[in-house]
Length: 307
Image (cartoon, rainbow, N blue to C red; front, top):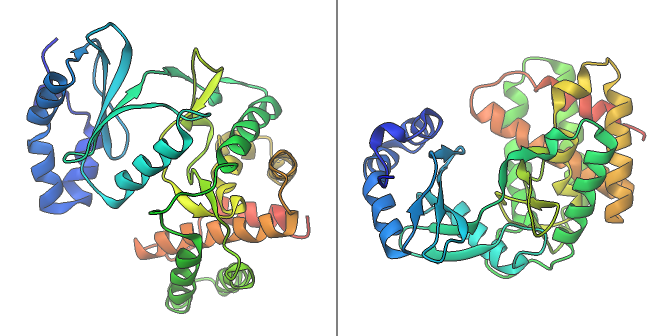
């Protein structure tokens, strides 16, 4: 199979880099076929399947010279990719996809190959899926954050600075008050941001089936902080299924109880940092032009109120 043709680059990746990263992103896209060829040659890899993509990376299934299955991940060098490398090395394959090789100049990574066709979303029983995710999550946050990562304290301070302006943009007075309450929760916790190694995006679709372990996490966006700030992606997993029965608060509370119990978290503190995550998501939405809070965020916050 040839290294990579420009026409093979998935539209999802083209859209992200073509619009979200400006001229630098478009230049990186133009050079992607050449980069793929270079890395395949340098690491003596052979392509064995079609290209796939996330929001910011291209993934090629490959075989090493010795026949070992792996994936070649190509992405533009950014702060997030540097953080991912720090996290992958710190976890060293414990519950996390293994880093096999890395090119510092291009941020290219060679990773172990997992079963990309089977995620935790394939488990219909939500309690079983969430228990599996919680146990994996507990292993990941047991690792102290290494040096070189962004800290939750800095992120919390940045969020609190943005709140006054964001409040003026929201159209609904009730939602303005809700945003203030989320900010208050963060302000109460900001002096103790935590020091654990967080995944920052651990949801059902970022956990894949594997051979060396039943389930392994992928695509970390590492951060140093309190594990409570890491719960929202799990609570939000398969959200359409959560709201479909018309009993979202019960399901959210059950998920929250399971996560906090398995991770051994203080519940009020975990609630506060989860509200902080809703605040972060809302600030991003407002920056992108939103004038209303996202309905799932409002529902999730209401589900945890006084729980």
